[in-house]
Image (cartoon, rainbow, N blue to C red; front, side):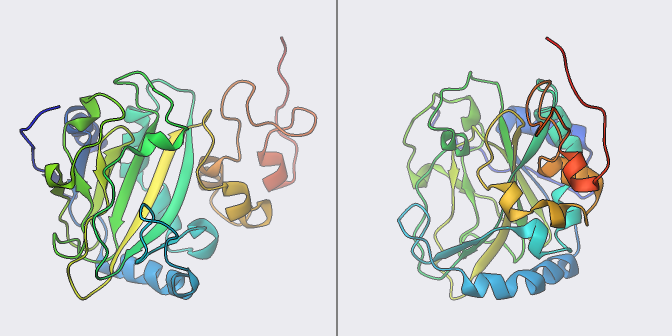
Length: 280
């Protein structure tokens, strides 16, 4: 562990996937400022608002007693769908996850709405979701993005992170004071790998902080959000085919993810046969 806490580096909207991936390799996190317009965020918010309002607050300290987490965004928000497979995102994933796996998949989609008075979240690694399995250092199995649906400020609970901590030992318990805020204007995107130590910020303002958390993992790992219930076949067949495949309607590896008699999942979506089968 180091006591020299770096700040989150910020790239402009013209940044390439190579630029993003290079900083992720060094810092484990990076922000791209104002990648989409505030109007895009407003459109997603308008579609998700009825669901957010019906979402209960978190049941425990980790989830946040003043925080709402609203999922199923592919089915619920058409305006969100282009963000889930935004070219800069998928290009970065190709480099961060795709360089050591057959494919990657959507892991979760979630509006995180942190209310006033919410304290800072426990600093953690997202990859602990896989039952705290000790993945090899330097082998990334997960990458997340956080889209700023509102401005992210230190006062309203901007995501906190420790740049460079993806190289630290596992199962540490860093303190909130060791983190720095990922401050960014509305429409920006914060990338971070599953091994970086981070947490939700304390909201000391009088307004709610809304962000869209989207996770991606290697296709041989179980998804946090059950995408086949969140976006069932009848919905998946109405969306872009590449997005349907990203959700998981494709084989995750040579012998993973088929159904029935070695059928490709896209048969369930498109209703027509595809190439099938494998031999041993």
